[in-house]
Amino acid sequence: MPNKADRIGFTPVTAEHLPLLLDWLRRPHVREWWGEPETELDHIRAKVEGRDTTRPFIIELDGHPVGYIQYWFLADNKGPELVEASPWLAELPDDAVGVDLTIGEEELLSKGIGSRAVKLMVKRLLDEGHTTIIIDPDPQNRRAVRAYEKAGFRPVPHLQERTPGVLIMQYDKNNETNT
Image (cartoon, rainbow, N blue to C red; front, side, top):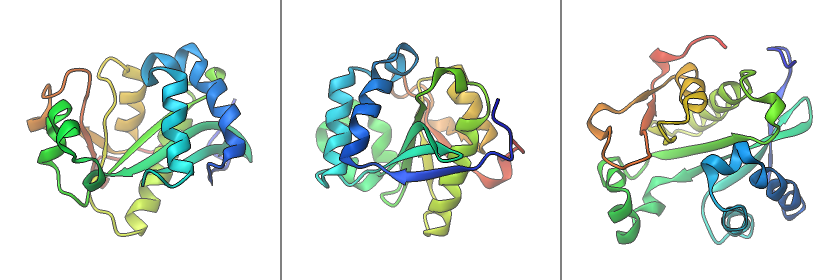
């Protein structure tokens, strides 16, 4: 079982990671929240090839791949069709960044890895000068919502229930718990 002494790190996704990512995306615990595996992999491939500004990473635990995390720029995701599908995008500042992640190895769920990984990514983003950091889980994904709450994210009250299936949460350093 992982513990707090285990080192979490990030490795930029390359084409060599795509078969591993497809394997994870096909697993029921990931597919439930991420959608069609081949479609999701095509999105990741676009990021790796530089056709999308999102930054994708493999989450590593003591050097072993255990999950996927990415951060994306809100300003690059405010096209008319995206805002129509997700109106909340228009209500956040253009300089906001969003984070998405999944743990690919099912036996590592509910071990604190997700909350530790997102905290580490938040630290990285804050160090880079970003001040508005969001995450948008499905509100039914209680495991993810709890992990993000532990990492300091809280629901944005005025954006709640604005887009079905999305809980907009924003990072607030005053809400972090020790994990």
